[in-house]
Amino acid sequence: MSDDIQDIFDDANGDLAVGDLESAVDKYRRCVELDAEFFDGWHALAMSLMKTGKIKEAIGAGLQATTLKPNDLLAWTALSQMYVQDGQIGEAEDAKANARILSLGGKVVTGA
Image 1: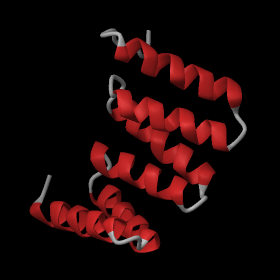
Image 2: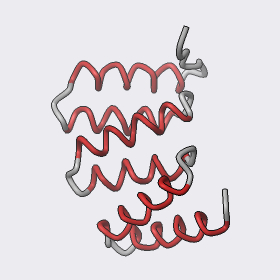
Image 3: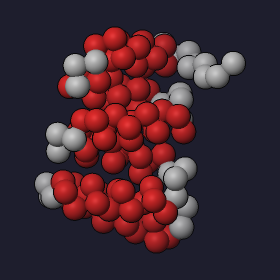
Image 4: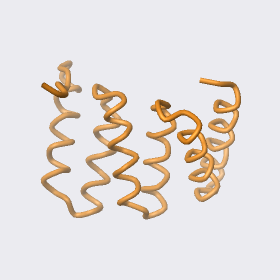
């Protein structure tokens, strides 16, 4: 990851810390536009979007985070919360099941 992306990410985290969610969202978006493989950027974007009530977008970012790191417990937990907020209970339960597998020391199997 470049220093520029890290600087933008750090600025976004600062915005988040002081409650400027819209500015944080904009900066997290910029991070993932500059590096589509930046897991922390996708995860932070998803969480910030969820906090601003943009649930559909949050789910998309959350899915990207779990695609990049399918064995990240927090990413699956957050995605489950996003699905619950969107009323997608089946999807929420699936994401929660993946988080549970990871919490017990297992791995999420992706693809065939």
